[in-house]
Image (cartoon, rainbow, N blue to C red; front, side, top):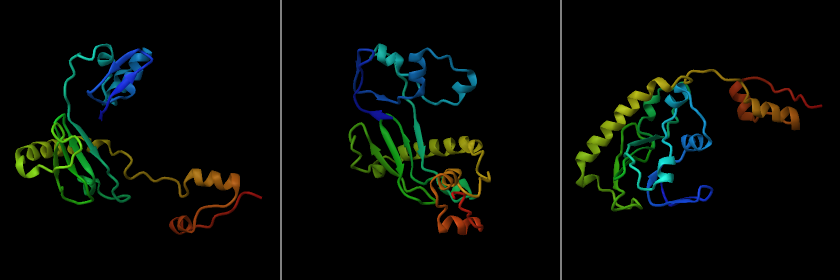
Length: 188
């Protein structure tokens, strides 16, 4: 979500001061692309075209979730559930900023503190309870999306391999240790 002034010079429309998410759907709508039902189901963003046409157009608020992820290879994704995650609404930003197995929530009232300088979790426990519950429901809902968690990739990154073939050299000592094989320099 971006809180900034955005200017669409191409359309000659100035749009300022709204919380927005600019993304693929806006460009697709401007271009006149017709998205299939399957494509629309995979896109979370909303088109900004209604706001570009009319800055006073109705715009429903929504809750946004972020999560850094990054769990160990073949590990349990749940270990990263609270790893640098956040829940954002138009007023609140709930953040767990570290690599803990449990959340270390910080709460910011972005309506009155847009720079997020003051943690207000002590005065708004009900907000933390609601937003953390929303986070837990979101986390549960995305578990089915982790389809490649146990995928086995190539022994050597193909980009490294092609680079070595093209320019000489090969994988690092660490790469060789990890794959347990010998690199044959294919460049004469």
